[in-house]
Amino acid sequence: MVSQSTSLAAQSPAITGAWLPSFTLWWREIVRFYRQRARVVGVIASPVLFWVVIGSGFGSSFRSGDAAGQQHYLDYFYPGALIMIVLFTSIFTMMSVIEDRKEGFLLSVLVAPVPRSAIVLGKVLGGTTLSAVQGLVFLAFAPLLGVHLGFGDFLLIVLTVFLVSFALTALGFAIAWPMDSTQAFHAIINLFLIPLWLLSGALFPLAGASGWIRLLIRINPLTYGVEALRDLLYPTNAPVFPLGSSLATLLLFAVFMFTLSFLMVNRRTTKPAA
Image (cartoon, rainbow, N blue to C red; front, top):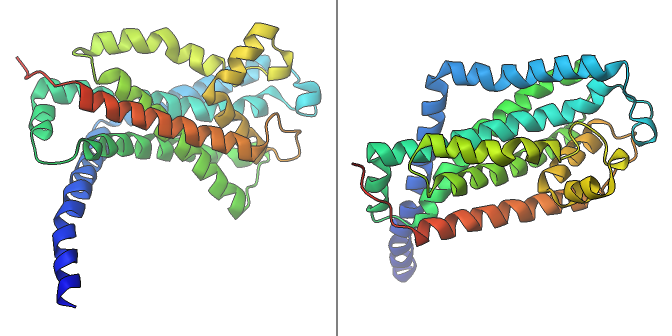
């Protein structure tokens, strides 16, 4: 009995040392974001306007045909607009990595006796929580499209949004980590952020794309998030990919991006702020 207590006591500092920094960094990301109310409004309002304007504008001329049973474009575009919210929130939340470096906060965290994995996990989970919550808030518009979700389908949507959010936040972390300015971050993000979303099947169905575009869509991990949401929101439509394979692809994408972020943190030594 004494030996078991001693063993648990010896393990508890290690457990606390890993999870307490992660929780602290996670909570810091939440507080920082919601103190900036303009960001909260902008992240949700922009995709909503984009969804309404683009969806209404193309609605009279677009029918997704065999892929969605003459589905209106406003309905077809809805999962893509949700993914847009998740994408922008996940990526741009990780600008805090650059800001923390400039303020000297990141350096103080790196020299603390905590695992590097805890630092990555805390930052990534913070951005994941923000993007996932805002993406799920967008589900409030689903009843306007005649979509009524059961509890099981809702849980699968939560899982899908979480996996997409986690993977994209880890991607944003990996991009932001080696950078010293937000201007460089914006330049790199604008280079492939929109193409990543455009080539996810958010705007047009895979079946109607040309050969090389279809190939890019299939190798884009974000495609599987869009299609998983579309399958769950409109279960009567014929799925492009099986739901299980889409979720498995998203899981592999999330694990890969987190591993990449962890390797980058362990490889680079942060320079002190000037």
